[in-house]
Image (cartoon, rainbow, N blue to C red; front, side, top):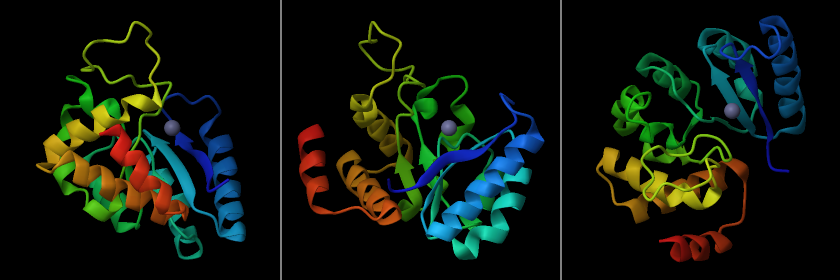
Length: 186
Ligand SMILES: [Zn+2]
């Protein structure tokens, strides 16, 4: 186990009430601080409450990523100001829902960007040929890397390496296996 999570607030789905979510999130923040572990965070339609619950804990936390970021420019800037890493998924590949997010790609500092699939969810909509199953898989990550690299005007291999370094820094993982993995996927 390398992180606490994923945890956070989802006022879009509201599977639990906002108050129950805030209670659980606060307990998880406290646990991460107590164990000095990074956090894997989820926030959907809950930015203000998310930042206000998170902020008091920031000095006690070794790091955190707001995964599957789909917020606005202001929300992105608040997350960066809080020192968070920003996780981007194949949401950015969606020709309708992903448009606003695409414009934010150049604004994320290289050392704060993480790329992820959110498998089995969020199959990238521009994947060709389309998989017969609707299930997203970790093996589609290189596609997301290429799309994000294009939006940032960067080389996809260099971006993959950078994001791998970021993940290893945040989650405090070993370096050596990574280089092999990247060389094989590209
Ligand atoms: Zn999530």
